[in-house]
Each structure stands twice: as C-alpha cells, then as structure tokens.
Length: 461
Image (cartoon, rainbow, N blue to C red; front, side, top):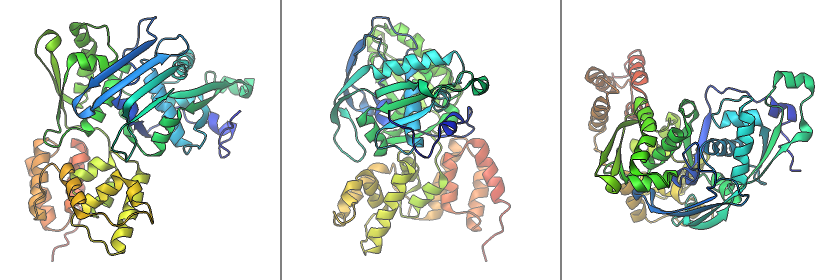
C-alpha cells in the first residue's frame, strides 16, 4: 500500500473542510485543450472508444484516440470534474514523487466543485473506474511546458485508484460524516503528473466554476478559457470554428447539426448571462455552419496584482504580464524572476528586458544555472513582438490615457472616473501600473479602487 503523506494523518485527511470560500485551483492545459472527457452528461451504453483528428485554429491540430480497457463506456460528463479534483489534490499534497494522493471522498468532491452527499458516492466511484479503465493515445498532440514540439504518449489519466476500506470510521465518527467515511488512494498517469509538475497549468476560479450548472457548460467554460488564452493578439476577443468540428471535439459524434445547437444553447446562454461571452453567432447552413464566440469583458481568471507588478518592474508591459501570470504557476514566475535578476546582476543588458523575461518563462531549461550563456537580443525582441498586441507609447502619461480609454470602452470605468485617474496620476497619488491593473478588476471593484485612491495624499510638490 502506498501510504498517505507523512505530514497528514488519517484524522487530518478526514477533517478537510466540506466548503471552500476561496480556493486557488489549477487546470492542466492538455486535458482542457484536447477535451479528453466527453462533455455530454450521458453517452450511448455501447460507446467504448472514440477518435478525433481535428484542426481547431489557435488550439492547433490534434490526434487522439480513447479506448475503454474494461468494457465500460468512455469517460464523460462528471468525470471531467473528478479529474480536475484529482489534479488539484496532487498539487495540494505537494506533487508527490510517486504520483499518489490520499484523501477523503468528501474532500475530492470539494476540489472537484461537486457538492458532497450520499448520492454522490456511487457516481464518484463509477467515474473513477471509467478514468482508470480508459487508455488515451496522443499522436504528436501532448504538450509539455517549455517544449516547442508536441509529443506522442499513451496512458490512462488515472493509473489506479482504490478505496482504503481498512480505514473505515468508527460508528461515532460515521454519524458526523455519514457519506465521507472512506479514504481514496489515487495515482495519476505519469505524463499527466509530469505535466503538472512542469507547470503546464493555468488558474481556474473554482468559486465561478462551482456555480456553473452542468458538465456541458463547465467543459465549454474551461475549453473557451483555454482558447481565449491562445487567441492571436490581432483579434483576442473572437473565436470561430466549424460547428461539426466543434461538436466532435466536445464528444457529440452522432449529433446532427440542429441537435448540436440545441445541446449547446443552454451552455451558451449561461455563459452569456455571466458575462463570460458577449455573443454567440452562427453563420452558414447545414454542415457548412460555423459558430463564432465573442468574449465578454469578464476576466477568464483572476490574477494576483503582486505577481503582475513583479513582472512589470522588470520591463514587461502590463498586458503581456497579466497574460503570463494567468498562464504560469507562481513558482515558475518566481524562478524566472530569479534567473532574470541573476543575468542582469552578472552584467547582461537585454535590448528588451520584457522579451528576455518571457523567454526565460517559456524555455527555463535554457537558463539553468551553469548551462547557458546570455541569450541573443534578437530572440528576445521576437518574443516581445509576438506577445504585445500594439506598440507601447513611450510617454507613461500617454500610455495610461490609452489604458483608461480601453477601460471606459469596456464599461469598467465611467469617463468621469477615467478623468479622476488622470488627475491622480498627475498628482502622483497612483502609478501607471496601479491604473493598468484595473483591467483585471470587475466594474464594481474598479470603481471602488478609484474611490480609495482619492483618500491618498498628493505627492506632488
């Protein structure tokens, strides 16, 4: 038996909270981009295999097959949430070298954004069986952090799982936790565990995710969040895809186009109601139809302003900094900053410091201590150009005006509040970075932030 982490006793594991007000969750990007778990809540009883060979624009080309090894149906619906929970349990327990985590069934539900309860036990165990009993093959499709080329892999997302029956609660404790009396031992597939360790993840706001009603809308939310992250800088708010290809990607293989649209409609409506999508537009007829997603102003993920400031202080523009904080774990960002500081302390002067910092994040192995020389400036310049949507104004005041105009257009600030920000900037009561970080705030919090700045004393002589 693989034991639980030494720092956590059986009592600790069973005492994990059943509700979480704020939880930092992370989404492994291959799982989401490749839509490995079929989105429909129900699948035909004989569906034991599928394959897809698609090209989805910014999401890239992908070739994946799935086959049930146990004769069960392939993973679908709720299984996506349970896999998310297993990944975050792995992160929460320090990413053990043996890829194994031990936790209560109740806490797995919490990490999966599922309400714990007696009816969930059977569904959770059935889901874990499907994940363990299915093998996936990826042909030049599985990405690794910092690697420019996708790899070919074959594995089960969940290598094994079991219920540790020998740790059954005594009767007195069972009355307190009637549906959480079993500990689970989960072992992630090795390539999946490796991907999480290497930081190929992005933040997922579990407080938002928990409120989404069905597996279809949850899957679509995660997939479109990943899509939004990789859209070209020239048009970062729209994504168009053939309806048939999109249906196959989501696991609706035998649906006609009208049925696909009916299946997606409730999810589209829910995501528009929440401001994540501004519009969904269908064009064309029959099998030639396309769907275009127009993203709203609500953020895909919340980002830590302190981490954004850490990057902007080293020459990265605010927009790319926000994007990188949303794409990399804090440990990778801190390591990149340390490598950047070590290079500059050694006398290296990059022509574009932000480009150098980005290159360190994307290719950390190039900057391992003692293995590389300072990078050539042209490569850093190229990286910076790719990330930045528009050239930065050289005048800080002019740059801030551009940011404020965008915030007014996004209806996060009123024109009067934007003018107030300019006045506060002139009086040196706020900085350009503080104003730029309003772009990751909600309309209400942005307005409140401006109000709080008014209480600051002026620093102008």
